[in-house]
Structure formats: structure tokens, C-alpha cells
Length: 268
Ligand code: PGA
Image (cartoon, rainbow, N blue to C red):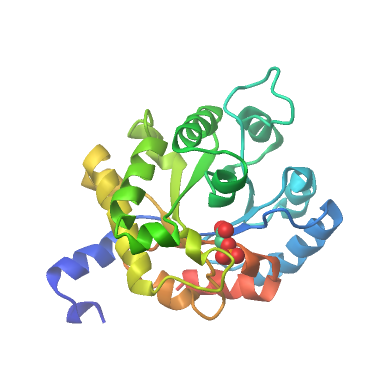
């Protein structure tokens, strides 16, 4: 199929091979430790031959169970937030260093639910990102517009700005510890998925923003996921887009067969 593409398109497709496809489940505030173990045990055999990276983003309380259940498998564990200070008088917080010490490799940051309900801002997302990187975690940084922002026609500028602020102070060398997740807020948990074209357009804007800061080559190496009602039925089309390198999956990540189908689509 490649030879039917223009040389520019071919370049984009070749660039896609430079980065790893990453499918991450965002379990949100779901599952007790025992339930987490059961779900991971159900997912494990279904994704054992995955041709992409597979991550489960679990609640803090489930981390020990998830690390135990994923031991020796191809599934990595992510947290869903972290604080940037190593330790101190920060009641209720969990530091990036604490997560890293336990064996957690990834941390979702700046999810729209954190921004909407828990006061996260572009500035705190930046601090969390720097803290996560400093501790040795890979940050999955979420950006995305609300419906009214999309209707106002400011999606691209807004997402570019969120990306720039989140990565303030992140060096080119540290870019290997960054994944960006484009999650249109209007598509999260609503069953309204962005079209493949909409998802690709904004992911390409994010990549162009990264290229502006770090250069084209560095930007080509960054995994950019789409998230927002991605499911077993629509994953293949979304993941086939040249600038969509993976998915951050909410609802569908809680059903092992559905999550496995998405992993399979990303492995193609
Ligand atoms: P959803 O959630 O797949 O349930 O829309 C995605 C997310 O919030 O990361």
C-alpha cells in the first residue's frame, strides 16, 4: 500500500516506525486490589504477544497488587497522578519518587478529570511532569480541548499551548520520558469519539509543537496517543492514522477482551 502514497505521506508513515505504539489503560477510580489482580490476570494471556507497549494505569491503592500480578509479563504499571516534591508535609499526596521506588514506570499527568475536579492547571501539570521525569518515571501528559473551545475554533492553539507549558524545562534528552495523550474533553467517557481525521490533525499539531521546541527528529520519536471513547470497534481506524501512536483507554480498559482487541489493533 505504501507505494500508492505521495512521497510526503510515505515520509510520515516511515516516521511512524520510529516510535513505539503504546496502549495504556486508565482505570480511573475503579477496582480494589483483589479486583485489580483478577483483571490483570485476565488481560495477561490476551496481550502476551502484543506488538506494542501495554500499560495499566491503576489507582494508588492497587499498585502493589498490580506490580505483583504483572511480574514477568509484558505489562507495565502506571500511576494516575503524582506530586513533584520527594517528601514532606503534603498530606494526602504521593511523590513521583515513592512510585518509582515501588517499581512503577509510568504516570498519567494532567488528565482532564484532575484539571476539572482537583485543581490541576497547566502550571501544576508542568511541575508534576518535571518531578516525574526527575524521579525516573515516564510521564503520560494529557492535553485536550473542551467542546466549547473546539466550537470556538481554538483547539489547535490551545493544545499547542498546553503542550508547551507542560514541557517547560524538559530537555531534549528527557523527551524519551514523555508520552503525550491527546484527549478531547468532550470525547472522554461520553461515547463520542473524535473522528480519525480530527484525532490525527491535533496529534500532528502536537508533533509540530514538539518540533518547534526540540527539532523535527526529536519530535518524530515521541509517542502521541489519542484518548476519548476509544474502543474495540474504533481503535483500528484511529491507530492507523500517521500521527496517532497509541491510545489512552478509560472505560474499555476495564474489560479484558475489549482492551486486548485495542492492543491487537495497535500491534498491526
Ligand atoms: P474513556 O476515557 O476511554 O472512557 O473515554 C479516556 C480517558 O479518560 O483517559
